[in-house]
Image 1: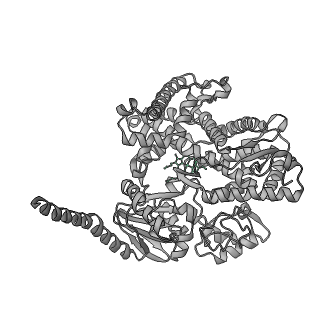
Image 2: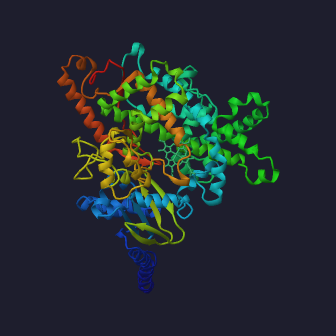
Amino acid sequence: MTSLLVLLPTLCLASVAFILTWIVIPLYRNIKAARATGLRYVVVPYYQYNFIIARLMRLTLLRAFDSFAPGPSNTSWRVLVTSLWPLKLRHAPFKELGTDTFLIVSPGGILFNTADAAVISQILARGVEFPKATNIYKQINIYGKNVVSTEGAAWRYHRKLTSPAFSERNNFLVWRETLSQTQRMMRKLVGHNDESKTVSHMGDHTMRLSLEVLGRAGLGQKLEWPSETGGKEQPKSFTSSLEYVSLHIVTIMVLLAIFPKWFLRHAPIPSFRSSFQAFEDWSLRMKEMIRSRRAALKEPSDTHENVVTDLIGQLVRGQDDESDEEMKQLFRLSDSEVLGNLFVFMIAGHETSANTIYFTLILLALHPPFQKKVQEELADIRGGRAVDNWFFEEHLPKLINGLLGAALNESLRVISPVLTIPKAISQPRTLSIDGKDATIPADTLFRLCIPSVHRNPKFWPRCPPAESNSPAPPVNEIEDDLEEFKPERWMTKETSLTGFINSAKALSAEALASTTQPMEYFRPFTPVKGAYIPFSDGQRSCLGRRFAQVEILAALAVILSQYSVELAVDEWAEDEHVAAMSHEEKMKVWQKAHDKAQFLLREKMTCIITVQLVKGVSIPVRFVRKGKERFHR
Ligand code: HEM
């Protein structure tokens, strides 16, 4: 009894001390610091980047509120503690708070969120002062340090040594491989005699396509799939270990972060063991590949052409380029760093490109009139040439500057594969925000919210909404068409651009200068700096931007020059039934497929490293020979 009398007050005192030390005092300090910035702020009970606490809170506090309290508003703490709100709510919280920059304050830290192009461009231009938040990327070092996970001098060293790999010669290889692999993919997706059949999981096919292109243009490897080896799965083939690693990358990284290697090697759970096995397999294969590539490079130089052009060849050659021995030791990637970089090229370049091809196809299937215009332009561009005779130098610029390029720009605007760009500061930094200087306290984590700035009405030419069902209902009152996929936005007629420029607040000098162009002149629309950042910008912008552009445009061009992509309607009508329908009946059934696809793009998106449809959800499509379309001719 006496001991209980002592224990209870001690426990109470300990709890009060804990709450004061870890919650009340830090929260008070953070609120004070946030107030001093002069920016708007919202207080939330916990820090979302403290993963253990955030997970605990999601399971308890958040769940309790979600069961008993009415649905949260767009600016409620229940929404703002989640990492997905920029994806789900886009620009809505900014609009409701009446600002394009606000802070989220919690006991664990301050988050700076912005959808303001002017603020984003300052942060990206001052890369040294606003470095990447590298501790978020620690797990990515599983094979070795690399250009994605480092900062400061280490990053400069990696960037200097990896950039030459993304040469125009390599892009040519990407072009050639994509043309050939896409034709191969289409032969599988379209039945004999061009009979159209439903492709239920198009995302899986674009994932393989992108892996094949990375395999060839990145690692110099032709990937053999089980169907091409007589249907026999080869458990230890390079392809299967590469595919396994790329599809299970999140699991592998989490396991390696939690458990020691010796445990995973003998883990009692089979899936843990196979993940670890794949991780080790890939490492062994890559080390072997690096060794044999180094040997090949020592051969006489006239046989080098094929072995230096891919990414691995360029990195290995870079290892030996420096003639000065001392410099070689300082500025030379170790084998583990070559491996680490090849691995992050795969992570950074696989899903991002694959999903962009997939989503652009879906968006074009949702917009048949624009798809038709693209196909007409493609026919002009290629002038009857067979795919194998398309020229990189001649055809690629036409694709980039044409309607397909506009479709790609718009697809990346509405579904950016990367959700937010994180930056972290270790000392106070001053930014000009809405014309005033704001000093942001040290240790603030910055999030440049891509979906939000891509829909910020201040920075984009816009019209009233045309589609009643565009993917936006979290934003209750949709006042413009920025939720809609409208590639025409990127083909600006000078007259409308002038109107836009006059009404925009933040303008680049180039945009102002361009107002002197003739009224009837059409040109690609150039957004204000900081407003369009699918590949980020500044010194840490995407290294594989052109690699990705070449791959995505080449793949789409091959597909659309021969086929139309349609939404599949199997859920509502069988083929024979559709064939016997009147035009009106067909349109009704197509509208159902359209509404469902819009619903999925709106409600079933998530972000696991990159933005994607949630596991198990897909939008089925069909490829039909041009002229044989079932719904829109
Ligand atoms: C549609 C396709 C792609 C998109 C939208 C994309 C987007 C991005 C973004 C936003 C970043 C900056 C991330 C940050 O700062 O947190 C980035 C960085 C990077 N990307 Fe991409 N990327 C794409 C394709 C690729 C491809 C194909 C590769 C390589 C094969 C690649 C390699 C890289 C690398 C190495 C970095 C790190 C650069 C550095 O930190 O210096 N990306 N990418």
